Image (cartoon, rainbow, N blue to C red; front, side):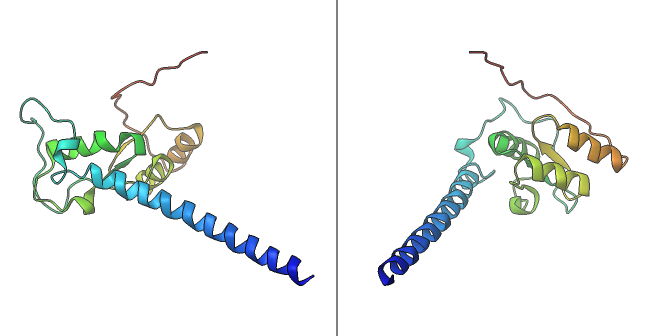
Amino acid sequence: MKKLFLLLCIASIILSLVSCASRVSKVEQQEMYSWYYVPFKNSQSLAHLDSESTLKFPNDDNLPVIDGATALFPVYCSFVEAVYPSDCKVEDFVKFSKTDKAYEKLLSGTNDIIFVAEPSKEQKEMAKEKSLEFNMYTIGYEENFSG
């Protein structure tokens, strides 16, 4: 009986450690990914325009908060580097919340611009309930492969 109890305790500890390790690695991946594409710090990782952007935001406290999907993080960081002032506090204006949270924050007024896939029916309905309408601009298409 003592051996069974000890085995159960060890199994429980191992499962807890595995669970913690998987959460830690996800956080590290996200932090590593976001660090790799930080505007004005790791510029070699970002896309650059051939000439100066015709749109430039002034350096003030009214810079738009930008957020979006993980897959589009390099795209919107490239946008930030092209149009935001180089001396702005990037961490105040560039967020990394993923698609669903980015939509939630946009609808709550926390975010101003999001780079995401098209909204789901539920997200469109949430906007409609708040009497809001999405202004969407296509920046790319996802290919549908049939196999």
